[in-house]
Length: 309
Image 1: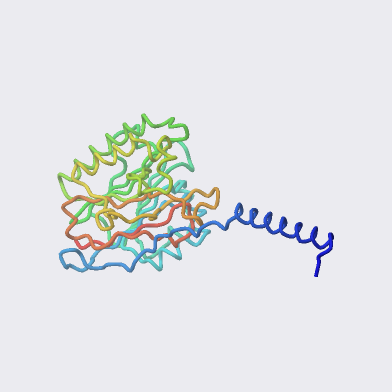
Image 2: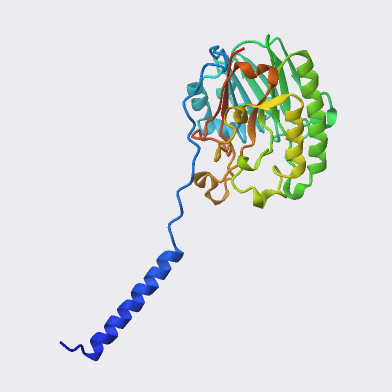
């Protein structure tokens, strides 16, 4: 049957509508699902067959009081580490929340904060057993006034928790950061001559391109400058090891920090800034180095080390 002009027009308009809809759908393609790092089951035996004897958790809490309100302590109780190290507490000792000062699991608690700016920086170490000795800072006033380091001596090793200074927006503190890296390495090397050590905390650097989502776009940004990465390389060359990369050298999409902006955590657009670094002498006792990326409460997630010592 011969089609009338109206039918021909309707058909042509329908085809145009379909073509426009297809073009629009192509432009508004559903975003790809984020590639996540699935933290595998914990290994609790060392490379030389010994069972893990020490469990250490480290977490940049981005404000201790806010973290407590976000139920961070509930996660810690489930994780049940022997030592809990916290960074960026932003809380003077006099203002500590009762929920954390009264924790019976950790009868030995140590705090360090900025002496000049209340609510800035700050680290803490909470222990089930009493260390042999505890010190604060690295022996240089220009660094120690910001409350960034606590060192505890245990029978078989030193444990150092650190909140390494950020190079800052526009890299305004990059020169200071380079000085810090030099002085901190000297401090760690001196400790290592006495006894092997574990360093944990927010070291504010993504060492390799695999340690952040967008390496090409961040080469001039704090945390991924050549200078900061070289500082970490020098740490590795001085006889220390990145425990996570030692066990998982090629693992991608494993991050510990996501900015609150642009829904970055849901998209897994992150950085690996938090580490367990250890003396090479302790590597035979390394069981596992974990990234607990499902734990919420901060813009960082916690990390946990299993060690046989």
